[in-house]
Length: 209
Image (tube, rainbow, N blue to C red; front, side, top):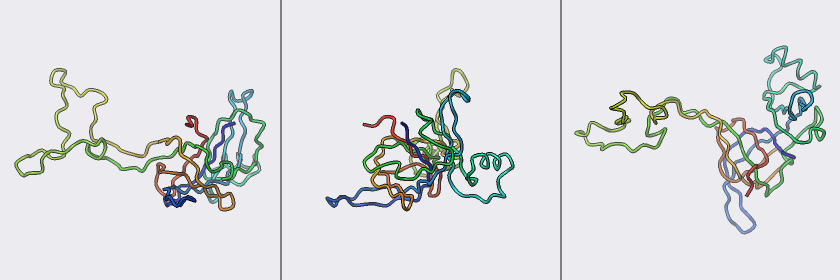
């Protein structure tokens, strides 16, 4: 059965193994999440649960959202995300999901929104090389030739300056190093997308090695 939890990126640190090896980890404030809704194949066409996470003042919710949470009998949550599941009967509306849904050593996929970098040049956005920085060069950080002399147009897919970042990215096959349900913390080996405080989703790995 697929497992998943919503969380907030806290930051990076390192932990030491019993052999004294330093392991870089990202700390995630994972849950607690509440099941706000169950979707079934008979009614909705697929099996899924809706998880609520995070706090927000109730006067900031509109009436439809307040009614949605009142129907589930839970306090309104800042974030709502759907998770596809195979066995819908294993969950109940109002059920709490904590960080101990994952155990140390498990492989997970982490989904987040990368840092937004605004409008960026080709060097920063695509890793282009720059030209000589001498005064006589007159070519330093520009995109260069577009290789479209015959058609007299720019081909689709051409790497050019533009909006960079702020996109959904999934990092696969990360290892859970520690799971603390008491403090709602997960320590995952390696880096994950997004800024500190950004929303992330930790899911059971689909391509575990």
